[in-house]
Amino acid sequence: MELINGNSEIIKDFFQSMERMLEGIGKLVKESKPHLNGEKFLSNQEASKYLKVSIRTLQEWRDMGVIPYIQIKGKIIYRESDIERLLQTYYNKERQE
Image (tube, rainbow, N blue to C red):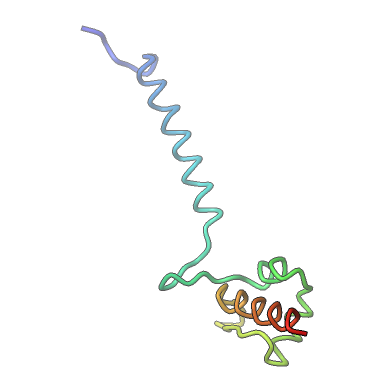
């Protein structure tokens, strides 16, 4: 009967596998976005990058009512579906002209 201890290959392999799993889980958690009822939300920074506009332009669009947003305790977020709808609307409008 083989004695299993901390120096055993089986134990070393097990802990290496656990390390890889934990790294993968950590990466998923870090990259995940908040979802609510299947809806994905973007921060100001994320929306700015997604639309390729400045934060100031986003603020102007909010002020003019061009882009819908949600404000919770001073933090502004955007529904990804609203941004996609906005892009589709302006894309279709440009194609028609």
